[in-house]
Each structure stands twice: as structure tokens, then as C-alpha cells.
Image (tube, rainbow, N blue to C red; front, side):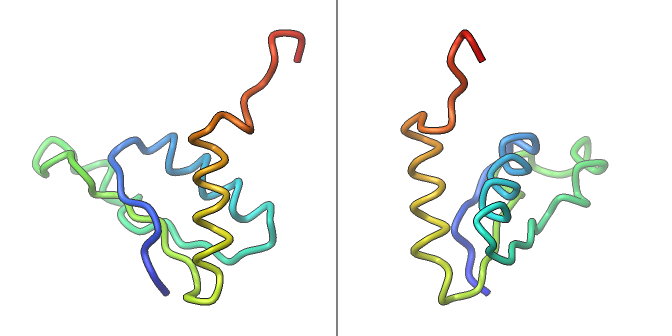
Length: 77
């Protein structure tokens, strides 16, 4: 597996993981169990989304689409 995302926002990492899984890719969110220890750990970049090496291009495309706002809901939604 290869890391395609590193960050600190647990909710964003969960959202990205879910978006990638919806595309049928296998995803592992590394560092999620560290959330409870943030008082004692540095809070920068402790989350990493891991995918199979062959899926990294598609997973990165999904993250780029998220960053562009392609998944944003319209006001009427």
C-alpha cells in the first residue's frame, strides 16, 4: 500500500476515505486511532490514507476532484 494523503483533519480524512471507497477501492486510514492521544502527540500530519499501489492514480484523482469542489453540495441540495 502507498500513502496518497497526509493531514490532520480527522473528519476530512474520513470523508476522503469514504469517497475513495465509494469508487470501489480498498482504503486504509492510518493514524485514526491516535485521535484520542492528541493531547500528548504533535497534531500535524498524523493521518494518512493508504491505497493499493495500482489504485493510487484513481485515488489521487478523487482527492483532486474533492479539492476542486466537485463533490460540493448546491444550496438547493
